[in-house]
Length: 63
Image (cartoon, rainbow, N blue to C red; front, side, top):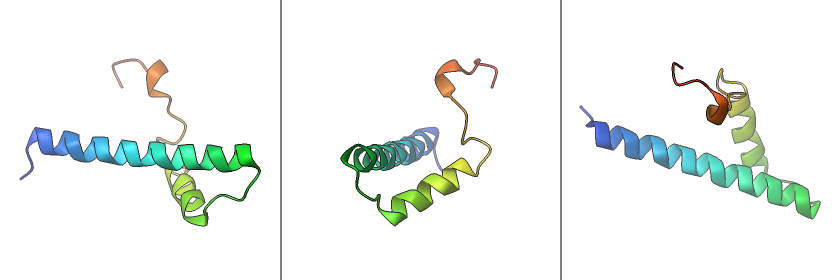
């Protein structure tokens, strides 16, 4: 069984990877180049989840 710290580290790694994908997609858009198809697929899969449109900054703590 994983410890709470291991779970936090794994989740943080996931979030940091998604941030890297987001930055690469934005860079491609700003440069006017086609984004990496793998990054596009990752973005699509995240958007398809129930959390795709959640802005955690503005979400109440109860969620």
